[in-house]
Image: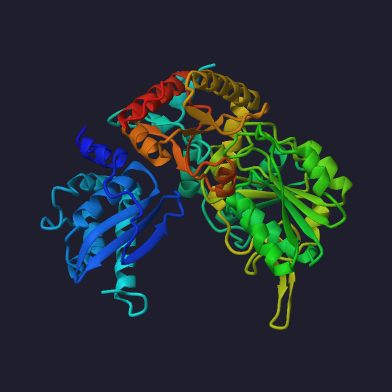
Amino acid sequence: MNTSLYQPELLRHSTNPANRAEPANYSVKASLHNPVCGDQITLFLTVDSDRISSAHFTGSGCAVCIASASMMTTKLTGVAISEAQGYYFAMDNVLSGNADDSFVCDIIRPLTAVSAHRGRHKCALLAWRVLDRALAALSMPVGGKP
Amino acid sequence: MASSPEMRSRFPIFSEETAQPLVYLDHAASAQKPQEVIDAITGFYARDYANIHRGIHRLSMIASDQYEDARTETAKFINAPAASQVVFVRGTTEAINLVAQSYGEQMLGPNDEVLISEMEHHSNIVPWQIACDRSGARLRVIPITEAGELDLDALDGLLGPKTKIVSICHVSNVLGTVNPIHEVARRVHEAGAVLVVDGAQAITNTPVDVTALDCDFYCFSAHKIYGPTGIGVLYGRSELLARMPPYQGGGGMIESVAYGSSTYADIPSRFEAGTPHIAGAVGLNAAIRFILGVGEEHFYRHGRALTAHALERLAGLPGVRLLGHAVQRAPILTLAVENIHAHDLATLLDEYGIAVRAGHHCAAPLLGKQEVSSAVRLSCGVYNTLQEIDFFFDQLAEACTRLGKPIA
């Protein structure tokens, strides 16, 4: 069933997520939760000049939410902050069916299956919303270490 | 007892051509509608429709008669002493809000207390929080036992001279527990308080006779008892309704209006400002005729058979936890599967054509107490079959396996 959400790659990311740890050092941290389902993601970004040198997360949630966080943190490593600032918007567009091919790399491709399941968009988007929030905190003068 | 093909055929949604048969186990969220309810609403709009209580013309009188007939039949159905004790509202939520605002805020003061229970839906929590915030009264929570039943001893401990209102569900939308309303009413009245009952999940799962239950207010929605959405009922004791101020102002609820002041209509019109959901009332009346035609006892027997079968199937699945083990229960079973999020299960079950509710079921505090953040709920109506229960449990096991966490 190719419309299924639970393709092997997504399940692999949800059962063995990448970057699921709280690092000892990081540049910025942000958290959000989905009040409807209780899913919760905390994101830790380490920034080196204008690039994200590492991204980690902790939290709990459904397979889609965790897989999304795992894929996103994998994709983020080495990405310019200015580019990552457009990711939440781009991901939202992918799920709404306005997919931008340059954004959908192989790492996050399994998430595009979520687009057919409107009730689950918020599960896939949670990590990306946290990213948006973390980057906003980073660009604020107080506490930011650019 | 399996639902007969004849019963299922009365619900057109099950005859729709779909990729796979619909296994609708989300009855507690909303019931599917029998053809006769759909026909009653369509027929009313097609033949008899006009606004009510205002027109002198023939159609307005026909529509008014049908609206008031629905009130009379509803009163008989729940054994209310008089039709005027039945107030039409949008649903259970509005009924509770009406009592909380109109009765609650008039009766509550800073030293008073309102009691709810740990098994309440958000709609029987938040209206009381608002009423307490505005009046300075204190909201207290009656605990439930390990089995998920109301702790009556704890209720006795909480009841006192400060208690003004107790508001509890008749049937829990999560645990399936049927609460002993008559017994609760006796204790509440001994303490000099009034009892409000959230009956959203009760009718067709347990007898609802407001006189025998001896409650002061009873709230329910038509859409959960095979009727349309947007219409529900607040039953109230006449003497309480009579001294309550209006809930909303507008047409239909006044006796006379002048710019200086207005006087309000008698009950129930005082609480029905504006054009009501006339077709909804007609649909509710049709739903009541459907239930009485089938016979209420049939609904109870059918629900017990489905529940017993589901509990049997559950016994073979140690990785699945049932929330609530009340002796008196409705066919509402909420399940938490170890290490699997309910939304993943519900999405996979949907792929097999199974409709269930997943999440916190608008009872976040209760799930929190059960140390569960989300759960899958199967809930049954008169159209469900034992085969569907089997199919649910088979596919639940399959879904867990697909998610890499087999349970069987």
